[in-house]
Amino acid sequence: MNKTIDYRKYLQPEFISRITGLDIIARLVVEGFITGLHRSPYHGFSVEFSEYRPYIPGDSIRNIDWKVLGRTERFYVKQFEEETNLRAYLILDSSASMGYTSSNITKLQYAQYLGAALTYLLLCQRDAAGLVTFSEQIKSYLPPKSVFSYLNQILKEMDSLTPKGKTRIADTFHILAEKIKKRGLIIILSDLFDDSDAILTALKHFRHKKHEIIVFHILDPMETQFSFNNDTVFIDMETQEKIQTYPKHIKKDYQEQINKFLENYKKECFQHKIDYFPVTTNKSFDETLYHYLVKRKKIGG
Image (cartoon, rainbow, N blue to C red; front, side, top):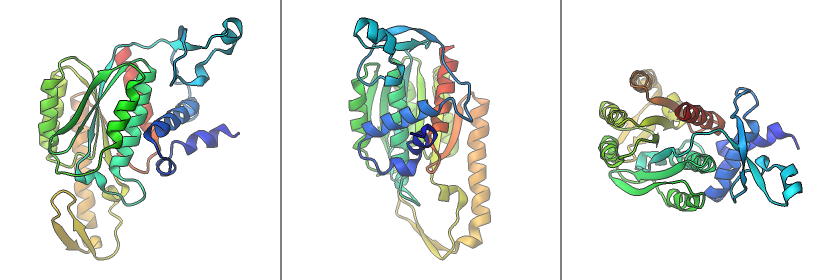
């Protein structure tokens, strides 16, 4: 089998969108990512081997030591040098605007696939993973746990989401910053379509509480490119307000505004040591997962 083609296939959002079951999607994306990790452009990224531990369901079979199996008739996997006891909170936006798509995958679906893969990675690393979903208010709160069996509960909650409701991102973040008492890693999956100044203030609230933050700013390609050609009626997915316009007349101004919007997040997050990554829903999952691993190694020292 051609390994290069195989792993890249499972990292493509369009391909993954045809697969049913977040548990299967999470495993395929992560296995594809690990298989391709040492290939360009991430050649050389690795963790150091430390010791063995018993195999448990969900571990990658790639790490099974077959020689030890032959000697002991027991399955053991290679344990690697990783700082444990990290608490990670995946904060997933399921407001109505996350339901937009110009292709076959909505922003919410992309966030679900990415969130599932991140949860799988966290639990495989013996870190604790938790989930918060929200729109106008917090919908669900699953506190971080490090047992692999917790994966099913988190994925079930993610899978139940439908994009609806208005967005109150800043209010949600402030509530969570006060609710989460122990320092951890905050992973945000959202289109951030709300008052950007208020959101940035709320992100700084997390930093004030000593949390590490990764923001995956998820957008549809059409929201950044604005490649509409004919007379178009735009409908606000949260308020249902309608605007009819000829896109070519406003494309330049729109692109200036969206670039300003993105640059403001990039600049402010950089200044406050918040990892910020804009992601479009046609982007392969390996780049976003790699950003997480780099952050994880920094936290682990």
